[in-house]
Figure (cartoon, helix red, strand yellow):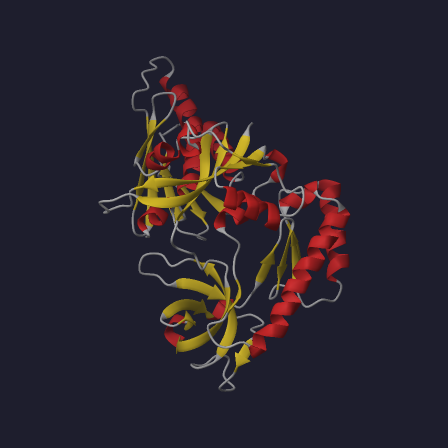
Length: 401
Protein backbone atom coordinates (compact mmCIF):
# COMPACT_ATOMS: atom_id res chain seq x y z
CA UNK A 1 0.00 0.00 0.00
CA UNK A 2 1.40 3.39 -1.04
CA UNK A 3 1.03 6.03 1.70
CA UNK A 4 1.94 9.70 1.32
CA UNK A 5 1.32 12.94 3.17
CA UNK A 6 0.49 15.92 0.97
CA UNK A 7 0.91 19.48 2.32
CA UNK A 8 -0.35 22.27 0.12
CA UNK A 9 -2.82 25.16 -0.17
CA UNK A 10 -6.21 25.15 -1.86
CA UNK A 11 -9.05 27.61 -2.41
CA UNK A 12 -12.22 26.21 -0.85
CA UNK A 13 -15.66 27.70 -0.23
CA UNK A 14 -16.78 27.47 3.43
CA UNK A 15 -20.41 26.78 4.20
CA UNK A 16 -22.61 29.87 3.81
CA UNK A 17 -19.75 31.84 2.22
CA UNK A 18 -19.90 33.60 -1.12
CA UNK A 19 -16.16 33.64 -1.74
CA UNK A 20 -13.38 31.06 -1.72
CA UNK A 21 -10.78 31.14 1.05
CA UNK A 22 -7.22 29.87 0.98
CA UNK A 23 -6.74 26.88 3.28
CA UNK A 24 -3.59 25.07 4.28
CA UNK A 25 -4.26 21.37 3.80
CA UNK A 26 -2.44 18.36 5.20
CA UNK A 27 -3.81 15.07 3.88
CA UNK A 28 -2.82 11.43 4.24
CA UNK A 29 -3.31 9.33 1.11
CA UNK A 30 -3.41 5.56 0.82
CA UNK A 31 -3.20 4.32 -2.78
CA UNK A 32 -4.18 7.81 -3.98
CA UNK A 33 -7.32 7.91 -1.79
CA UNK A 34 -7.57 10.53 0.93
CA UNK A 35 -8.03 8.84 4.33
CA UNK A 36 -7.27 11.73 6.69
CA UNK A 37 -7.25 15.50 6.27
CA UNK A 38 -6.81 18.64 8.33
CA UNK A 39 -7.72 22.10 7.03
CA UNK A 40 -6.82 25.48 8.46
CA UNK A 41 -7.54 28.89 6.96
CA UNK A 42 -4.17 30.36 6.04
CA UNK A 43 -4.64 33.40 8.33
CA UNK A 44 -5.83 31.55 11.47
CA UNK A 45 -4.18 29.57 14.27
CA UNK A 46 -5.45 26.77 16.49
CA UNK A 47 -4.93 26.71 20.27
CA UNK A 48 -5.25 22.91 20.47
CA UNK A 49 -2.48 21.40 22.68
CA UNK A 50 -1.04 24.84 23.57
CA UNK A 51 -0.03 25.31 27.23
CA UNK A 52 -1.01 28.55 29.02
CA UNK A 53 -0.91 30.29 32.37
CA UNK A 54 -4.69 30.64 32.79
CA UNK A 55 -6.87 32.54 35.25
CA UNK A 56 -9.92 30.96 36.84
CA UNK A 57 -12.90 33.09 35.83
CA UNK A 58 -15.48 31.22 37.91
CA UNK A 59 -16.20 27.83 39.43
CA UNK A 60 -19.46 26.06 38.52
CA UNK A 61 -19.94 23.47 41.27
CA UNK A 62 -23.18 22.24 39.65
CA UNK A 63 -21.19 21.37 36.50
CA UNK A 64 -18.23 19.97 38.46
CA UNK A 65 -16.01 22.31 36.49
CA UNK A 66 -14.28 25.65 36.37
CA UNK A 67 -14.08 28.14 33.51
CA UNK A 68 -10.60 29.51 32.87
CA UNK A 69 -9.32 32.27 30.61
CA UNK A 70 -6.23 31.50 28.54
CA UNK A 71 -6.44 34.89 26.86
CA UNK A 72 -8.56 37.92 27.59
CA UNK A 73 -12.13 36.88 26.86
CA UNK A 74 -11.16 33.38 25.66
CA UNK A 75 -12.85 30.94 28.05
CA UNK A 76 -12.06 27.24 28.34
CA UNK A 77 -13.90 24.51 30.22
CA UNK A 78 -11.86 22.78 32.96
CA UNK A 79 -13.69 19.75 34.43
CA UNK A 80 -12.78 18.89 38.03
CA UNK A 81 -11.73 15.43 36.82
CA UNK A 82 -9.10 17.12 34.62
CA UNK A 83 -7.50 18.86 37.61
CA UNK A 84 -4.64 16.49 38.45
CA UNK A 85 -1.32 17.55 39.99
CA UNK A 86 -2.07 21.19 39.10
CA UNK A 87 0.75 23.71 38.85
CA UNK A 88 -0.57 26.95 40.41
CA UNK A 89 1.29 30.17 39.73
CA UNK A 90 -1.07 32.12 42.00
CA UNK A 91 -3.37 30.77 44.74
CA UNK A 92 -6.07 32.88 46.39
CA UNK A 93 -7.54 30.43 48.88
CA UNK A 94 -7.23 27.00 50.45
CA UNK A 95 -10.00 25.66 48.22
CA UNK A 96 -9.09 23.13 45.56
CA UNK A 97 -9.73 25.80 42.94
CA UNK A 98 -11.26 29.28 43.22
CA UNK A 99 -11.96 32.33 41.08
CA UNK A 100 -8.81 34.39 40.63
CA UNK A 101 -6.43 31.44 40.91
CA UNK A 102 -3.83 31.19 38.17
CA UNK A 103 -2.59 27.81 36.99
CA UNK A 104 -1.00 26.05 34.04
CA UNK A 105 -3.39 24.30 31.64
CA UNK A 106 -3.22 22.58 28.28
CA UNK A 107 -5.98 22.64 25.65
CA UNK A 108 -7.09 19.08 24.86
CA UNK A 109 -10.23 19.73 22.79
CA UNK A 110 -11.06 22.56 20.41
CA UNK A 111 -14.16 24.72 20.82
CA UNK A 112 -17.04 23.23 18.84
CA UNK A 113 -20.23 25.13 18.00
CA UNK A 114 -21.58 26.41 21.36
CA UNK A 115 -19.11 24.43 23.48
CA UNK A 116 -15.92 26.01 24.83
CA UNK A 117 -12.52 24.46 24.35
CA UNK A 118 -11.63 21.90 27.03
CA UNK A 119 -8.52 22.26 29.21
CA UNK A 120 -6.61 20.00 31.58
CA UNK A 121 -3.78 20.37 34.11
CA UNK A 122 -2.35 17.02 32.95
CA UNK A 123 0.32 18.38 30.63
CA UNK A 124 1.73 16.24 27.84
CA UNK A 125 4.95 16.71 25.92
CA UNK A 126 4.77 14.63 22.74
CA UNK A 127 7.65 13.50 20.61
CA UNK A 128 7.86 11.18 17.65
CA UNK A 129 8.16 7.99 19.70
CA UNK A 130 7.49 9.10 23.31
CA UNK A 131 5.01 11.24 25.23
CA UNK A 132 5.83 12.68 28.67
CA UNK A 133 2.79 13.21 30.95
CA UNK A 134 2.62 15.06 34.26
CA UNK A 135 -0.50 13.68 36.00
CA UNK A 136 -0.43 10.02 35.04
CA UNK A 137 3.00 8.90 36.20
CA UNK A 138 2.69 5.32 34.93
CA UNK A 139 4.29 3.65 31.91
CA UNK A 140 2.09 3.14 28.85
CA UNK A 141 2.85 1.28 25.62
CA UNK A 142 0.99 1.54 22.31
CA UNK A 143 -1.41 -1.37 21.85
CA UNK A 144 -0.02 -1.82 18.33
CA UNK A 145 3.34 -2.95 19.75
CA UNK A 146 3.47 -6.66 20.48
CA UNK A 147 5.57 -9.48 21.91
CA UNK A 148 9.22 -9.18 22.89
CA UNK A 149 9.57 -5.70 21.40
CA UNK A 150 6.77 -4.45 23.66
CA UNK A 151 8.52 -5.91 26.72
CA UNK A 152 11.88 -4.40 25.79
CA UNK A 153 10.40 -0.93 25.19
CA UNK A 154 8.52 -1.06 28.49
CA UNK A 155 11.74 -1.95 30.33
CA UNK A 156 13.55 0.91 28.59
CA UNK A 157 10.76 3.35 29.56
CA UNK A 158 10.95 2.20 33.21
CA UNK A 159 14.69 2.79 33.21
CA UNK A 160 14.33 6.25 31.65
CA UNK A 161 11.59 7.26 34.05
CA UNK A 162 13.33 6.16 37.24
CA UNK A 163 11.65 8.00 40.09
CA UNK A 164 10.79 11.03 37.94
CA UNK A 165 7.44 12.77 38.70
CA UNK A 166 6.09 12.10 35.20
CA UNK A 167 4.77 9.27 33.09
CA UNK A 168 5.98 7.95 29.76
CA UNK A 169 3.91 6.64 26.86
CA UNK A 170 5.71 4.61 24.20
CA UNK A 171 4.26 5.37 20.77
CA UNK A 172 4.03 3.02 17.78
CA UNK A 173 6.84 4.84 15.96
CA UNK A 174 9.27 3.74 18.68
CA UNK A 175 9.39 0.36 16.94
CA UNK A 176 11.37 1.95 14.11
CA UNK A 177 13.87 3.75 16.37
CA UNK A 178 17.12 2.68 17.98
CA UNK A 179 17.56 2.76 21.74
CA UNK A 180 19.93 5.73 21.34
CA UNK A 181 17.30 7.68 19.40
CA UNK A 182 14.65 6.95 22.03
CA UNK A 183 16.99 8.02 24.83
CA UNK A 184 17.85 11.24 23.00
CA UNK A 185 14.17 12.10 22.53
CA UNK A 186 13.44 11.37 26.19
CA UNK A 187 16.19 13.77 27.30
CA UNK A 188 14.80 16.47 25.00
CA UNK A 189 11.24 16.05 26.31
CA UNK A 190 12.44 15.92 29.91
CA UNK A 191 14.37 19.18 29.43
CA UNK A 192 11.28 20.79 27.86
CA UNK A 193 9.16 19.64 30.82
CA UNK A 194 11.68 20.86 33.44
CA UNK A 195 12.20 24.24 31.74
CA UNK A 196 8.46 24.86 31.60
CA UNK A 197 7.98 24.00 35.29
CA UNK A 198 10.85 26.29 36.25
CA UNK A 199 9.63 29.19 34.11
CA UNK A 200 5.88 29.02 34.82
CA UNK A 201 5.82 30.54 38.36
CA UNK A 202 7.43 33.76 37.12
CA UNK A 203 5.22 34.17 34.04
CA UNK A 204 2.22 36.47 33.91
CA UNK A 205 -1.34 35.38 33.29
CA UNK A 206 -2.25 34.49 29.67
CA UNK A 207 1.35 33.63 28.80
CA UNK A 208 1.62 30.83 26.24
CA UNK A 209 4.29 28.59 27.75
CA UNK A 210 4.34 26.09 24.93
CA UNK A 211 2.95 26.52 21.45
CA UNK A 212 1.93 23.39 19.56
CA UNK A 213 3.75 22.55 16.35
CA UNK A 214 1.99 23.52 13.10
CA UNK A 215 -0.81 21.04 12.40
CA UNK A 216 0.93 19.55 9.36
CA UNK A 217 4.13 18.98 11.33
CA UNK A 218 2.22 17.26 14.12
CA UNK A 219 0.30 15.08 11.66
CA UNK A 220 3.60 14.00 10.14
CA UNK A 221 5.02 13.10 13.54
CA UNK A 222 1.88 11.19 14.55
CA UNK A 223 1.70 9.06 11.39
CA UNK A 224 3.13 5.55 11.50
CA UNK A 225 6.45 5.94 9.66
CA UNK A 226 6.81 2.22 8.93
CA UNK A 227 4.26 2.54 6.13
CA UNK A 228 4.85 6.14 5.06
CA UNK A 229 6.55 6.53 1.68
CA UNK A 230 7.14 10.30 1.75
CA UNK A 231 5.78 13.75 2.55
CA UNK A 232 5.35 16.08 -0.42
CA UNK A 233 4.77 19.84 -0.39
CA UNK A 234 4.84 22.60 -2.98
CA UNK A 235 5.66 25.26 -0.37
CA UNK A 236 9.44 25.86 0.08
CA UNK A 237 8.89 27.53 3.49
CA UNK A 238 7.00 24.49 4.80
CA UNK A 239 9.71 22.15 3.50
CA UNK A 240 12.44 24.18 5.21
CA UNK A 241 10.49 24.28 8.47
CA UNK A 242 10.00 20.51 8.41
CA UNK A 243 13.69 19.93 7.74
CA UNK A 244 14.64 22.14 10.68
CA UNK A 245 12.08 20.87 13.21
CA UNK A 246 11.60 17.16 12.48
CA UNK A 247 13.99 14.59 13.97
CA UNK A 248 16.74 13.41 11.59
CA UNK A 249 15.55 10.57 9.40
CA UNK A 250 11.90 11.11 10.41
CA UNK A 251 10.70 10.54 6.85
CA UNK A 252 11.50 11.36 3.24
CA UNK A 253 10.63 14.98 2.32
CA UNK A 254 10.17 16.24 -1.25
CA UNK A 255 9.45 19.62 -2.83
CA UNK A 256 6.96 19.43 -5.70
CA UNK A 257 7.85 21.90 -8.48
CA UNK A 258 5.66 21.21 -11.52
CA UNK A 259 4.10 24.58 -12.39
CA UNK A 260 1.89 23.07 -15.12
CA UNK A 261 0.07 20.71 -12.75
CA UNK A 262 -0.33 22.09 -9.19
CA UNK A 263 0.05 19.60 -6.35
CA UNK A 264 -3.53 20.22 -5.16
CA UNK A 265 -4.83 19.36 -8.64
CA UNK A 266 -2.62 16.28 -8.96
CA UNK A 267 -4.13 14.79 -5.81
CA UNK A 268 -7.61 16.25 -6.41
CA UNK A 269 -7.66 17.92 -2.98
CA UNK A 270 -10.79 19.97 -3.63
CA UNK A 271 -12.72 17.10 -5.18
CA UNK A 272 -11.96 14.65 -2.37
CA UNK A 273 -12.71 17.23 0.35
CA UNK A 274 -16.02 18.13 -1.31
CA UNK A 275 -16.91 14.43 -1.63
CA UNK A 276 -16.22 14.05 2.11
CA UNK A 277 -18.87 16.68 2.82
CA UNK A 278 -21.62 14.89 0.88
CA UNK A 279 -24.17 12.79 2.73
CA UNK A 280 -24.16 9.89 0.25
CA UNK A 281 -21.07 7.80 -0.51
CA UNK A 282 -21.20 5.31 -3.39
CA UNK A 283 -19.43 1.95 -3.13
CA UNK A 284 -17.82 0.00 -5.98
CA UNK A 285 -20.58 -2.62 -5.85
CA UNK A 286 -23.24 0.00 -6.61
CA UNK A 287 -24.45 0.08 -3.01
CA UNK A 288 -24.15 3.26 -0.95
CA UNK A 289 -23.95 4.58 2.59
CA UNK A 290 -25.83 7.63 3.84
CA UNK A 291 -24.10 9.69 6.57
CA UNK A 292 -26.36 12.04 8.51
CA UNK A 293 -24.88 14.03 11.44
CA UNK A 294 -27.30 15.29 14.10
CA UNK A 295 -26.75 17.37 17.22
CA UNK A 296 -26.59 14.31 19.48
CA UNK A 297 -25.10 11.58 17.27
CA UNK A 298 -24.27 10.51 13.72
CA UNK A 299 -26.51 8.03 11.90
CA UNK A 300 -25.15 5.92 9.02
CA UNK A 301 -27.45 3.87 6.81
CA UNK A 302 -26.24 1.14 4.41
CA UNK A 303 -28.34 0.66 1.25
CA UNK A 304 -28.10 -1.82 -1.64
CA UNK A 305 -28.64 1.14 -4.01
CA UNK A 306 -27.75 0.31 -7.63
CA UNK A 307 -26.45 -3.15 -6.76
CA UNK A 308 -28.50 -5.42 -9.04
CA UNK A 309 -27.15 -8.86 -8.11
CA UNK A 310 -30.10 -11.24 -8.17
CA UNK A 311 -28.60 -14.59 -7.17
CA UNK A 312 -28.19 -15.52 -3.51
CA UNK A 313 -29.52 -12.19 -2.23
CA UNK A 314 -28.77 -12.83 1.48
CA UNK A 315 -25.09 -13.55 0.72
CA UNK A 316 -24.92 -10.48 -1.51
CA UNK A 317 -26.18 -8.34 1.39
CA UNK A 318 -23.41 -9.85 3.52
CA UNK A 319 -20.79 -8.81 0.93
CA UNK A 320 -22.26 -5.29 0.73
CA UNK A 321 -22.08 -4.96 4.52
CA UNK A 322 -18.41 -6.02 4.54
CA UNK A 323 -17.64 -3.47 1.81
CA UNK A 324 -19.59 -0.79 3.69
CA UNK A 325 -17.77 -1.51 6.98
CA UNK A 326 -14.39 -0.76 5.38
CA UNK A 327 -15.68 2.44 3.79
CA UNK A 328 -17.45 3.63 6.96
CA UNK A 329 -14.21 3.27 8.95
CA UNK A 330 -12.44 5.37 6.28
CA UNK A 331 -15.18 8.01 6.27
CA UNK A 332 -15.15 8.37 10.07
CA UNK A 333 -11.44 9.07 9.92
CA UNK A 334 -11.58 11.31 6.84
CA UNK A 335 -14.52 13.38 8.08
CA UNK A 336 -13.26 13.21 11.69
CA UNK A 337 -16.70 12.19 12.93
CA UNK A 338 -16.77 11.68 16.69
CA UNK A 339 -19.14 11.03 19.57
CA UNK A 340 -21.93 8.45 19.34
CA UNK A 341 -22.33 6.75 15.95
CA UNK A 342 -25.16 4.39 14.96
CA UNK A 343 -24.80 2.23 11.83
CA UNK A 344 -27.79 0.51 10.22
CA UNK A 345 -26.30 -2.25 8.09
CA UNK A 346 -28.52 -4.33 5.79
CA UNK A 347 -30.32 -6.94 7.91
CA UNK A 348 -28.82 -10.44 7.90
CA UNK A 349 -30.32 -13.57 9.47
CA UNK A 350 -27.06 -15.52 9.81
CA UNK A 351 -25.48 -15.01 13.25
CA UNK A 352 -22.11 -16.08 11.87
CA UNK A 353 -22.27 -13.35 9.21
CA UNK A 354 -23.12 -10.71 11.82
CA UNK A 355 -20.21 -11.88 13.98
CA UNK A 356 -17.79 -11.69 11.02
CA UNK A 357 -19.11 -8.25 10.10
CA UNK A 358 -18.43 -6.91 13.60
CA UNK A 359 -14.99 -8.53 13.63
CA UNK A 360 -14.07 -6.99 10.28
CA UNK A 361 -15.49 -3.59 11.26
CA UNK A 362 -13.50 -3.63 14.51
CA UNK A 363 -10.35 -4.49 12.54
CA UNK A 364 -10.85 -1.53 10.17
CA UNK A 365 -11.45 0.84 13.11
CA UNK A 366 -8.10 -0.18 14.65
CA UNK A 367 -6.34 1.50 11.71
CA UNK A 368 -7.67 4.84 12.97
CA UNK A 369 -5.19 6.77 15.17
CA UNK A 370 -8.15 8.28 17.05
CA UNK A 371 -9.61 5.77 19.56
CA UNK A 372 -12.90 4.25 18.39
CA UNK A 373 -14.84 1.71 20.50
CA UNK A 374 -17.30 -0.69 18.93
CA UNK A 375 -19.99 -1.44 21.52
CA UNK A 376 -21.78 -4.15 19.54
CA UNK A 377 -25.10 -4.82 17.83
CA UNK A 378 -28.47 -4.09 19.41
CA UNK A 379 -31.54 -6.34 19.27
CA UNK A 380 -32.79 -4.17 16.42
CA UNK A 381 -29.64 -4.92 14.42
CA UNK A 382 -28.09 -1.46 14.85
CA UNK A 383 -24.32 -1.26 15.40
CA UNK A 384 -23.23 1.19 18.09
CA UNK A 385 -19.79 2.77 18.44
CA UNK A 386 -18.10 5.86 19.82
CA UNK A 387 -15.10 7.79 18.52
CA UNK A 388 -13.10 10.16 20.69
CA UNK A 389 -13.53 13.88 20.08
CA UNK A 390 -10.20 15.71 19.79
CA UNK A 391 -10.45 18.22 16.98
CA UNK A 392 -13.21 19.64 14.81
CA UNK A 393 -14.83 17.58 12.11
CA UNK A 394 -13.81 18.26 8.52
CA UNK A 395 -17.09 20.15 7.95
CA UNK A 396 -16.47 22.30 11.04
CA UNK A 397 -12.87 23.01 9.98
CA UNK A 398 -14.12 24.26 6.64
CA UNK A 399 -16.85 26.36 8.24
CA UNK A 400 -14.55 28.11 10.74
CA UNK A 401 -12.87 31.13 9.17
